[in-house]
Image (cartoon, rainbow over all chains, first blue to last red; front, side, top):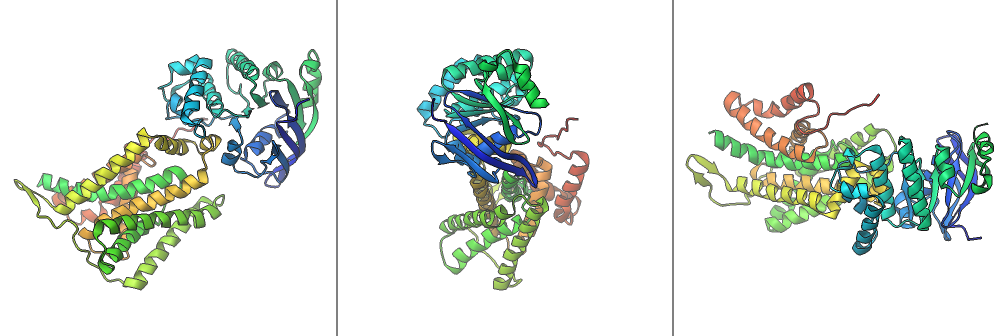
Length: 237
Length: 289
């Protein structure tokens, strides 16, 4: 068994006086795709935002290779190799596709960034065609490609995906699943929050169920194959 | 006469452009309207006055030092007084800006009282005569300096990686954080740049006008009028709005009534907000329901 890439231990996060995470504990293993499942308000997106530094944990630990990330600012956490594709994508709408992608690689050298850019274009040929278009003129699916491509441009050690299928057509969800297969085979570690359980089970290696800010279930997706109903019951009932 | 008024208007508009642009730079990155900005303009003018008249430093190095001083002042203002109240009510920012502006004005009044101070002319060259048209050295200096600064500013913004980064923060602060930009530090620098650009306006107006501690107040309202006309948040709109305001003041004063010069900015604000609230280049806000 590999040592975990990231360890989240007894994490508590509250919005004002309302607690969202109440001691969540889990590991992310290198090279895996781990999906966080749970009903609305269970703390899935909050977990990602706490890892990225957008919300400050009240207590607990988020460690990556011995470095403590809890409480750091988002740009400092990014320096540790954590990149997020957020639910709203947070692109730069008036900048071109190429500019959006290049900005994702600001912390890297020009040569490495240029190489990764070519890899991104090879992975997303549609972005190569639209490289000089402003991102606001792209479809939702294409914007999601830019968001994922921008995150990949930084060469992340851990890629966080918050609802990657949000608002996309079923055809595009399949494209996302194929893309994630490709990323996994390239050894990219992913932590995903996904409401679309079909995509979640299709893409993930492991799952964790959050309920009221606590981890209540988890395991290997393949081992639960054919018994997804039990997981769904655990999430919603 | 029309051309003469246009040259005067452009010269005046160039100063307004610097003030409006500096207000917009801060507004775009922080969504804060700096109601104390006129006093930063005043401070820039007074620092250059102290350096040139009282310390005898030549105008150009004094101007550079003044801009640098105001950059540092703007940066410290953001770091020390704006950052700590972040997360509070938005009106708190406005009140902080007003309060600090009045403090700066008060300091100037303590030192110089309410007297007006003459600043020596920078460009002591004879005016250029083109037929009936007279172009003064000061007008050439103001329009030329502003043009160079604006070209450099927009070139950096459009053509360099730093400029793309600035645009990125303007368009999505969260997105900027997701690509590793330290947005807090960026905002500090933005306040510095805003104060420095405003200071350039003050330094340029100082030799052609009389200095007094209240000089910034009128520039603030001109800056607001230019922003309104150009469209809130539009950088090029602020510049074009300012130039149009400058010439409009001259035309209104010459062809209608000289009293109109002082109220043109207010009229522009009222008319634009009624007729075209998003200004010439601003975007209409669309609310999806």
